[in-house]
Each structure stands twice: as structure tokens, then as C-alpha cells.
Length: 333
Image (tube, rainbow, N blue to C red; front, side, top):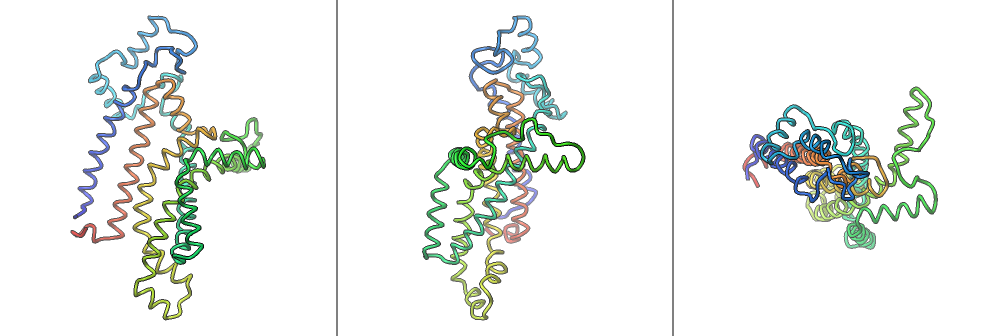
């Protein structure tokens, strides 16, 4: 089927419009009211609001208006780049997002890099030795990892490396009351401290994603071993390392790119769960707090940011796919 970049862009714009609509509706379909105490962790968790104050707040957020008017107001705010104010916290949503976003991005990018590199390397090794003992061990290990949820892997890492060995902190994103000092040295200390806190969460998220990359690289490499050009390369006496790096690895580029783009959404969802387990002050913890507080503006902003981010990454991956494989844009399937 012919793939045209312009058509791809139109398709993704339509998907983005659907995301915006769902982003508006989903928080409002949640049970409860953010202004009711009812056990929520919103602004009224401690005590009920007076009727006049409640009416003023509901009017400010448009909670008493019909859904149609709320949607028009929401779209107008988005067009101005205004994400609104949090209902549960006295701060603009954009500031809350920007404060938490670096933690989630650092966790996701580190985990993606680790799972891609480790899974691809192990997959190449298993595929090159397909049918042998090492191949069977690696495939079994990948199956076991894929069956364990991220939060269970995280709890296991915490039990061993934090509680048992004491090598890593139990939770959080930085050492409490740490004295970093001033200057460039302080920046390095802050980054090192953040990396120390993110090591276990990133490892948990990476291990959960290794299996897919491993099996994909393994199957692709095992299939390539029967190709005639690979037999010729062997006959010429080329070293195995050169054959793998210069011939086998480039053939993995397209399938790995496709799987990488599909993996982004799963990594984002896993990051939100892992952040809760390890107490990382990222978007996952903010989302958990917003759900409990029924904080519509924060939930809308997080869902919109995550969904549009995944759509953009997939669009870039498809455009890169067309660039790497021009046949997809020239009428070939």
C-alpha cells in the first residue's frame, strides 16, 4: 500500500483531534466531584467548602456549565497554550508538569536505551547460535521477564539492592537535606544523586522491555543465517564480528525501528507505575495524586501530553521508515 508523507500527516492530525476530544471527556466520566470531600485528596479533603466558596470555584472551572460550553472553553484555552490551574494544588498545571516532566523523561529514555541495547545484543547472540543451549536459555529468560509486571520487578530490585544490600535508596528522586554546595561541582553532584535514585527504577522498566527486543533480534538474525550472501561472507573468511556488525545488524534497523515506536506507549505506561513504586517525583506520581483528587486540569494535561508525545514519536518513526525503505513510498506493500 502506498505511503505518502502528506497522508500520514493528515491521519495523525485526525488522531490528535480524537485524542483532544477523549482528553476532555475521560476525566469528566470519572465518578465523583472534585469539590466533594468524600475521601478524595482534593482541596476539600480536610473539610467541606462553604456553599458560596464552592459555587465560586465551580464557576471558575466551569464545572456547572453544560459539556458543550466546557469543551469550547477547553479548546480555546488549548489554542492559547493555557492548561489551566490545578483544582487540588494552588499552582498552574503547566508549572506542575514542567517540574515533573524531567524525571519521567530521564526514566523513560534511560530504560528505552538499556532495553534496546541489551535486548538487541542478546538477541544477536541468541540468533547467531539458534537451537543451541545459549539460545534456549536466553529465550526462556526473555519469556520469564515478559510475564512479570514492572512493579513486581521493581519490588524485587528494592528487596535485594535497597533493603538487603543497601546499595541504592528506597524511594524518592534525590537525597533529603543533601548539601550540594554551589557552582559546577554542585550540578554534577545533583545529577549523580538523581542518577543514583533512578538506577533501580530505570533497570526495572528496562528489564520489562528487554524480551521484545531480544526475540525480535533473535528471530531476524536466525533468519538471516540461511541467506546466501551470509554464506558467501563466511566463505570469504570474514570474522563473525564483522559479519554481525556490518551485515546482520543493518538488517535489523527497520524491524527494530517499528518495535521501538510501538514500545513507547508501553514504556510510558510502565514508567507511571514504576514511579509510584519507587516514589520518583515524576508525572506518574502526579497522575496518581490527580486521580485521587479528581483534579480534571492535571489529568487532562497529563493525558494530552502523553498521547500527543506517543503520536509524534510514531509519526517520526513512520517517516524514518519511509526514508530507510523507499519502497513503502513507491507503491510497494
